[in-house]
Image 1 (cartoon, rainbow, N blue to C red):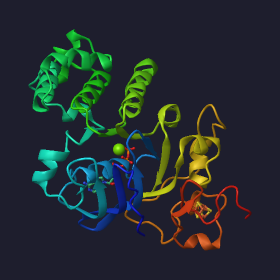
Image 2: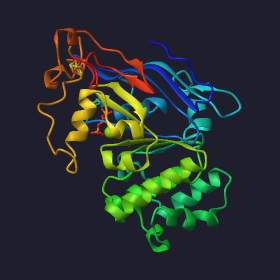
Image 3: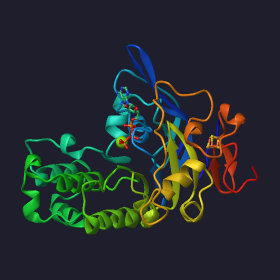
Image 4: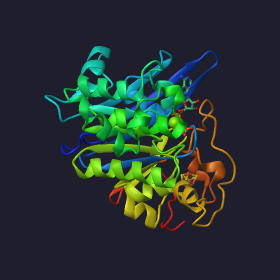
Length: 319
Ligand SMILES: Nc1ncnc2c1ncn2[C@@H]1O[C@H](COP(=O)(O)OP(=O)(O)OP(=O)(O)O)[C@@H](O)[C@H]1O
Ligand code: SF4
Ligand SMILES: [Mg+2]
């Protein structure tokens, strides 16, 4: 499927597919992703563990290992000329994209931080490398709730939450027009979590775009403009956040919301499928109360109101 690239998009992804070759199997990690994000937009990507969220982010930045095959397009605008991230060579990505045009808050920041440098050193280096004054380090750190004393610690001296916040500060410091934030609030208590979310929201309000990858639907509801739900490597529903939280149409998205403690608090029965052995049709069918015979063929995604939906019998349709 090919989507028209919206001229207002900062990033327009079409047909993005990632496969990992294993000795005895192929992992279908990301399949036929079509999505765009505009300047000023905060897109939340949600879904259960292992559905492909981090692989999607790493594919955009050319950070996948050698056993990965990536196909599709991901056109990044906003610089001198548009660049297809999936076709760009490593030199282009390293010199002009990673950290400059796209910032990444990695999911496991403790392992991504250089161990022999203090937070202050890392932050000052990042600022200097992007033509900004090193003296701003403490102000950038304060934005994520780190004190000057925290900045003098080495990565191994930081708690998980402090490392998480330092990683966010490092990604935000160069002021990239697009930020990929992969679970940036994990390990944080509620006030710090809210602080990080508000910081991301403020970046969007100043014109940046943010793709927030999160397990936390409450976080998405707090700050997102748009929500994309992934299931078993595919986006199954994508729409404006207010409409999504008022009533998702995909049975999986509906079940995700119903599992929240402040909603029905009903767990989704069963487990996601192995990405090495996906069924030919809808991967959610074994867990879906609306499944019918035609769900044995792969649904959509189709345009749906102001979003997209991949389901043969969505909620709200007559069955
Ligand atoms: N290098 C690799 N080789 C083979 N399979 C991989 C590799 N990296 C990731 N995968 C697989 O790709 C799938 C998607 O992984 P991914 O890390 O994107 O999940 P996720 O949605 O980010 O999960 P979580 O919420 O737990 O972070 C998983 O089945 C994972 O095991
Ligand atoms: S396509 Fe069928 S099985 Fe899949 S979510 Fe929709 S109704 Fe359920
Ligand atoms: Mg992940």
